[in-house]
Amino acid sequence: MRGRVPVGLAVSGDELGLLSAFLSGYLCCQLLQAQQGLLEFKHRGPVSESYSGANTSSSAKSTTVAFAGLLGLAALGIASAYWRPHPTPVHLDSVIAPAQQAEDTGYASSDEVRKAIEELKKALRGEVITDASTLVTYGSSANSYHPASPHSVAVRVNSTDDVVKVVNIAKKYRIPVVAYSGATSLEGHYSGIESGSICIDMSGMDKVLEIHEDDGDLVCQAGARWEDINQILKDKDIPLFFPIDPGPGATIGGMIGTGCSGTNAVRYGTARAEWFLNVTVVLPNGKVIKTRRRARKSSTGFDTTKLFIGAEGTLGIVTEATLRLAPVVPTKVAMAQFPTVEKAVSAVQEILNSPDGPHIQCVELLDDRMMAAINAAGLVSRSYPVSDTLFLKLQGTNESIQQTATTVQNIFSRHGSTAFEFASSEDEAAEMWENRKYALMSTITAGGEGTRVWTTDVCVPVSRLPELVYETKKDLAKSGLNKTTIVGHVGDGNFHALIGFNSDEELPNVSAAVHRLVHRAIALDGTCTGEHGVGVGKKEYLYDELGEDTVELMKTIKAAIDPLNIMNPGKLYPDDKPGKGH
Image 1: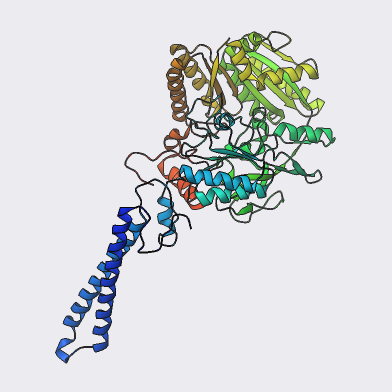
Image 2 (image 1 turned 135 degrees about the horizontal axis):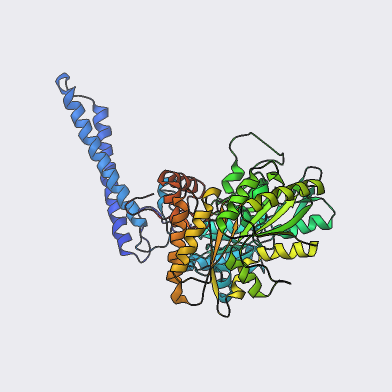
């Protein structure tokens, strides 16, 4: 077995191992002699009545102590025979308790990684990628500015069984495993591990496996894209849809991993609601679990499905999921301009708390700079007014939409809205909403040649959003970051800052601005991320946001499920505070 040697024998070429082996052999002899003496003492019994009592106890104790001491020294000698001054991990499960193994954080050596790659090639023929430039792409993103490393190998999988094969090889050699699918994450979620890692490309697992129209759900693989799922339902004339709508290209596995949401969250909630009825997961030990059955609700124990939502692939690899669907409801798209963000947010709060609030499917804020960027990008058929703007989707029957529209216009007028209009056609409505969904591309295009964008998100109670946006825009202007646009799910208090810049020299300034933004949001009783997830970029803020004890609970769960720490290590969980071990 790899890393194991017989007790008392030297590791080849290791002088320390030879010395340790000799010492362990000698101590074992002494141990046996002491044990024999103790047995003889017991067999002889006391010589006389006066020899009993304290003297007998004292002699037995001293012999036992000597025996225990020699046993400890022998164990130390034996353990030393295994030790080598090299970070290569070894399997010592025959002599080391599981708790001690979990504390070992070393990963596979480069030689062991090569062996693992050869085993992967045999297990998944033609699906193993070792091209250097491709591995860089798998391990980094042009839209993420966090530390990243290329993977050692990427494996394209097509089934849960394929994932099991990969995980078992990773477990055998203790190599980190990172899942990859839509590649839309922004916080370094799928970056490689410097010591070496296996990237599991889930994008080929993109099938819708079952559709249960009468039950309002479907079963799909983790690599399926939410847009494709809704298109399949539409093509089949099934009047249902999956309402969680993050950025274009996002896949179900990634959506589960980040606990995402989107523009529909104000009406339908987030991934942490009941939209995922169950998930199939390959655990770090290679076992496959399904978290629950397909029933709409269940009160059997705690919700293990939720354990994996937001876990960012650190507890297992999600391979399939059962999605709850919602009925397609007619919608109309509207747009309104406001003189300030504060007035726009106040209007939204009043609408959502009114009896017509449930008919608001989406309500999105685009600040004046974002509207200017949309115009400058040249991706629209007409120019929009350059002011803080709300985009809305109203849903329901024609009558309910008309009633809600009347309520919305009256409330908007009271809050200083300068204009309100419905899209004149379905094509215009689609274009208006597409411009919101492609805000990042508009910001990059409008910024001119060489513009890059650092995208971040935070979320606060809705009533604190105007203060957050105002202070953030003031801070960004003071910092000279004038290519920044802001878009937000204003009904949730969640907003995104898209900070444009042109050179690496500006990165420290951008990073500092993001840091201040996050702390500003947490100080307002908010969160460092409303929907992007933590990854590498936001993990440092979890102690401030959640508190040490909550973070400790998260780490305890991680250690229990993944004691070898091979599932996407270095993400989500903050590094230990100085002077505090875990």
